[in-house]
Image (cartoon, rainbow, N blue to C red; front, side, top):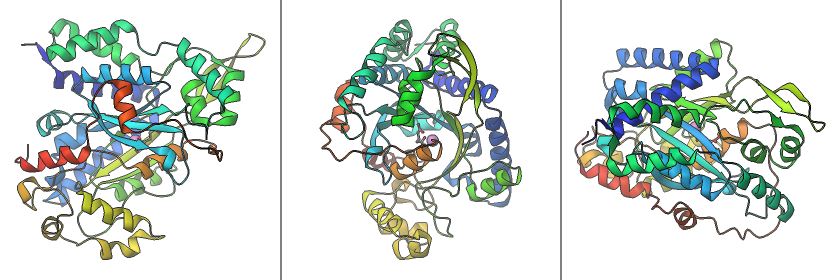
Length: 412
Ligand code: OOG
Ligand code: NI
């Protein structure tokens, strides 16, 4: 029996990352304050508000996002996050988005209802698709891979310790703080000078490539609180003069059951960074690599519900056709098999715990200055869910399997 259990480590990890991010990105602190106020007001006015999660869970709930460069780096991430009870769920191919982003992604999160209720922290994790010839020429790929092979994102001892903790199911009390602190530090923005010409060369090809492979470290690029009313949040942030992206991503607002995930974001300000110039001198400059995001979660859709969702979203104006695709009550959603409810009880929705590829690509792009052009060549990378599972030597959970299992249980 360990003194500190995995879920307690996860709770500390999420809380300490949040403290670090708040210290580094002041707009995040504003976002968290406004989110908490929106949630308090919403719960006060709506007696059913907590059916998608207790106010305690929702207030503590965050997701983060990180980006890495290689399969080996992704495997280290998988080992590290396993020590916090976070496992890969789903495969997101953002190269397939309407405006493609050259990454493939998964989300690390707790997979069962009890663990999610303890603390639902999740991290959307993307890997640069250097093998995809549509985005990377052979020459660029070689040089990016050389750069990535020379760097060490995670202290090998941190990964060794993570594997022990995962195997033991926790760690001794006196080791916990130090382990969490080292894990959090791995995602801090580096103070190391950025190589100006390398960063600029990559930026010219792909802003994502520069963010991932232009620097020797990774960083958490956003940390997202959850709100119960995202339209109200959007209004309040805009009133405070924070320019949000044009739209809320995902399903439209409507009077029926909230489904899946709605998200919106704003760009963080430029942050001071040091640069190493081609002549070796150090200069001061800025980079804008981090942003703010907020989300509202609804009921998880079954495969059948998801097909309806994708069909509605394919319309130019999804809000106009929403009622043709979805009934406006949980009773009907449950009886038509469109969404998951614990033991089929329409008063007990199973909350959606994952992400949406179109929204993710939109969030990515809204925070980059330039898009990446895909060349008209065949993709011979072989990237898919099986490839990724092999690369990290772990199964990647199918989200539908998890929702099927959760729906058999009583609400946690
Ligand atoms: C990840 C973007 C995806 C979300 O909430 O959909 C994401 C990134 O920009 O690295 O976090
Ligand atoms: Ni996000």
